[in-house]
Length: 241
Length: 241
Image 1 (cartoon, each protein chain N blue to C red):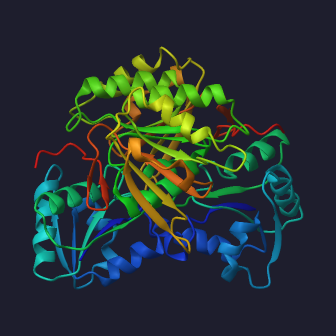
Image 2 (image 1 turned 120 degrees about the vertical axis):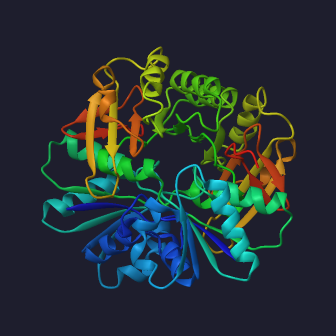
C-alpha cells in the first residue's frame, strides 16, 4: 500500500486527521528532504527515503519498490499531494508499469488555501492556479494561460513564482496579465505559509517588488472587485450588504 | 473572536487539527443546518445558531452580534471557508461596519481537492474553479470564464454544477467548453465527497449524463493530457517516464 499524503503547508495544525493516521500507519516515509523535516515528529524509528529537488521520479520509484516488498509506504508532498505534488507521478508509474499496488491519495490543504486564510478572503470567487515553473511545462503554454486567466478576471494564484534560475518569470507574468489586470488590483504575497518566518504583504498590482518573492512564496492576484482593508485582502462573493 | 472554519468536505478524517481545536474552543456555533449536522459531535452543550440556504447574511450578522457580546464564535463552512464559503462575507461585514472584532480564518480541504483524491490525480496541472450558480454572479460572466478557461486548457472544477432551479446550466456549460474540450477528454464526477453515499464516475466528455449531477456534486473536466486508467483519472504533471 502507498499513501500519497498532502501534509498541508507546514504546521501540524493544518494537517488532516487522515494524513496523520496514514503517517502513523506507514513503515517507510519517502519525500523531499525539506518535507521530511516538517513531519519529523511522526518518523521516530521508521525507515526514511529522502532526496533532493528534481529527483521525483527516482523517489516515487523507490516508494513503489518498497510497496512491492509488501511494506506500508507514505509518500509525502507539502500542501495537497494532488496539486503539483506526487499523486500524479505515483499513479502514472503504477499504471504504466501495470502494477497491482493499492494507492490511497490523502488530501491536504494546498498553499493557496493556507495563504488565502493569512491574507483574509482573496479566493472567494472563481480562481485559478498557475505554476510559473517551466521545468515541466513549455513557457508559451504558461503565457497563454496567464493571458486568458487575466482576461477571464479570475483571481490568480501563482505557484513556483520565482526561483534563482527563473528570476524574470514573475515580472514577465505581470506584464502579460497587465493587459487585463489594472494597476490598482490588490496582490497578496505570502512567504512560508504556516512555517517559521511566515510573512505576508498586501500591495497594489503596480507596486509589487519582485525581489521579495521566491520559491516558497505564493502570489495571489485579485479580480476586479477585490479590495484592501487594513492588512486584509477581500474578494466579495457578490452579496448585497 | 470569530473563527471562520472550513470543516472539509464532510468526514472528521479530512478536518484539520486547527479546525477541530477552534470548534472545541468556541462557545457558539453558527452555520447552515446541513453543516451543523456534520460537526454534531463537537457541539455538545454549545449554543447553536443554524438556518437554511440563502440566509447567509443574517447568519453572519448573528455571528458578529454574538462576538460583540464577547463570545467565542465559530462560523462553519463545508470545504474551505475561503472558497465560496463564509470567510468573505464575515470580513466584508466586519470591515464595512468598522468593527474591532478579531477574525481568524481556519483553512480546510475544499471539495475539489477531496474529489480529486477520490478520482486519482486529475488536478495535477494548472486548474481553475468556476461556480455555475448565478445567484450572485451574472451568467454572462460565468459563460465568459468557461470559454476562456477551456481555451487555456485548464483542468476545470465546477462547483454548484446543477440545482433544481438551474437544471440546464451544466449542459450549457458543456456546450460552451466544447469549443475547446474534445469529446474524448475525461470528466470526473464525485457526489457527496467524504460523506455517506459518496459515489464517483469517470466518463468521456461526450458521455456525461447531466441527470446524475446535483448541488452536492463536483465535476472535474481534464486537460488535453488527462487520461483514464481503470477507474482513475490522471493528469500528468509533465515528467518523462
